[in-house]
Image 1 (tube, rainbow, N blue to C red):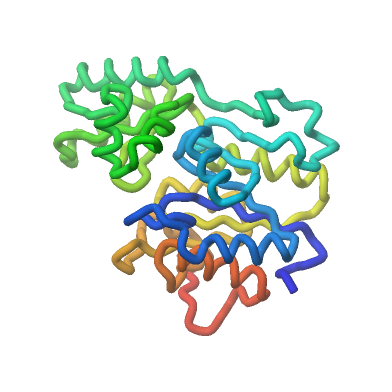
Image 2 (cartoon, one colour):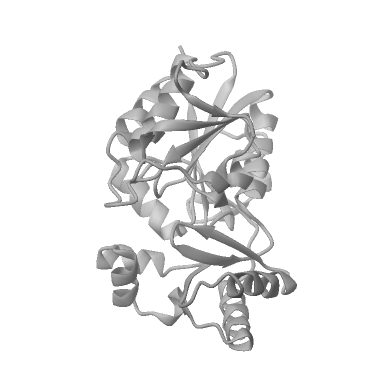
Length: 288
């Protein structure tokens, strides 16, 4: 029986390093964990830095049709058949999705980043400066998948040539002066609009609460940029990195750090929620 089975359970989850391996982007045990959870009536929402096109491709490959939050919180996409009858008609229609948009235009984001890098004389490598083949090589992606990651709407990933302790704070300061935000996930820096994963998760939670009343929420991620998402749920889980470590900067109060790495850690978190064993002997629970 699922945890708190009388209430609707909603799991928000990152993709890279969580559902997908950060080494080869394979899902491993994630697929069976999701299948088991959905059989217990648990709903999932994907929350990722990936684009809408990338997430749609992955969902089709895995046979999923979950709501998702793209580009670090740029927009919420809800499949048209999702039964949120009390709220869905108030949302914008975008193809086969209902959509809530938070981000500013991609062209404005890129223009701001270019001006900031020139002003500070910081050499960057941003996705909009690269062709599809170069993105594929940089990100270690197949060419077809790199095409999807180039279809960006709200968020620009970039690398900094010299990541000195002095340059990155200056870069962040200039981004924030433009009314924009900086975040980091994995090896990439990101410039985004005035939003984050937490704002989108909070909005989605409110939709579910209007539909179901009291709900139980959990979040699974592996990085510091997942903190805004973690802070919006009752049960946050931090998944270990490929080398067995975990990101200390991502630790918040009462977070559970999985024993498993990547998809194995994701599956472990899902099992905890299904089996109502939140405080299992030996599990690392941080009370920061």
